[in-house]
Length: 100
Image (cartoon, rainbow, N blue to C red):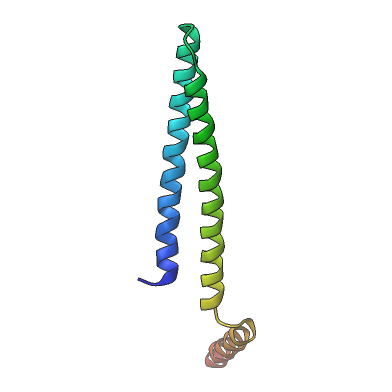
C-alpha cells in the first residue's frame, strides 16, 4: 500500500472516530441533563464531558495533519507544472494537426 493510500485510510478512520466522538458527547450531555433533572451530582459526568471534548479537539488536529500529509503526497506525485503544460501543448498540436 502506498503512503498516499495509507493516509487516505487514516483519514477514513479519523472521520469515523470524530463521528463516534460526537455521538459520545451527545450521549454524555443527555446523561448530564438527566442527572440534573434528578437532582444528582454531575461533577464526574461533567469532567468526562470535558475530557471527551478535549479528545475531539485532538482528533480534529490529527485529521488536519492527515489532510496535510495527503496534500504533500499528491503534490509529490503530480508532474511538474511546466512539464504538464508542454505535454498538454504537444497533445493539442497532435490533435489539431490530425484534423487539418
